[in-house]
Length: 299
Image 1 (cartoon, rainbow, N blue to C red):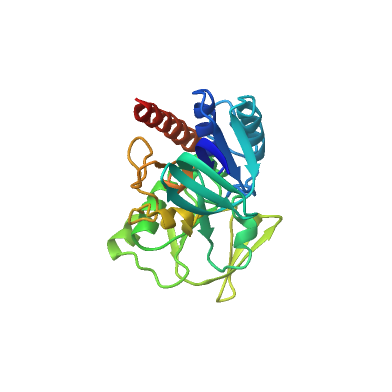
Image 2 (cartoon, rainbow, N blue to C red):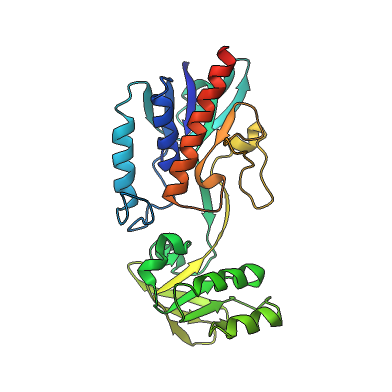
């Protein structure tokens, strides 16, 4: 069994950032990555200084090339499927049966989106069905836009998106659960509410053409915001006893420590603000805090 100071599960932006911080701290690090980032369909990444407009893959390739220059960092293509506490740290098993031991763990494993079963939505996800106005709103500014949401969240999200476009429709995909006051408030800003169920998202190579409704009508759109349900991407977190917040994200403190001693987490699995900038920031903090903990223990 190979032993490392830190095992990082997930090698996208937050995992790479944590690995760079630890590599520069002279720590022996293993990064296990399955190579399936959640934004792999997204054509361009935005709102990250020096890389605005680059593809997600381009940013990852540059990041990995830079981290790989630190000879204490090792990369492994694979999936971490099991994990347990040991007397000296943690043991991680991959899908191929490989075993590794680390004094500390950092989960940069992300989340798994559970998309609603609407034909066409998955093909458009990350392209014209988008999740974040700070990441993608500028590119569809002042265009005909929709929001797939309902209730309190639909109201608050609707308010936010009016900053980017005044041609906005809220699709509740069934009976609206907005209050009369909320609906009236949105209408005062010319936000239309449609309760008819969505039958299909018609598109061309991921670019929305229109939303086809169950009553036979359709609505032409350029973009549709959606916040799908999700689950944690790694089952090891639950096996180790890491606690989740009520919203499904991992419970971490300001140092990115989970509720399990020796286990850190960073990136999309910890916060609803899914962006490259946040992932890099939280990964840096996780790496630095993990190194500090190792130093304290050595003393």
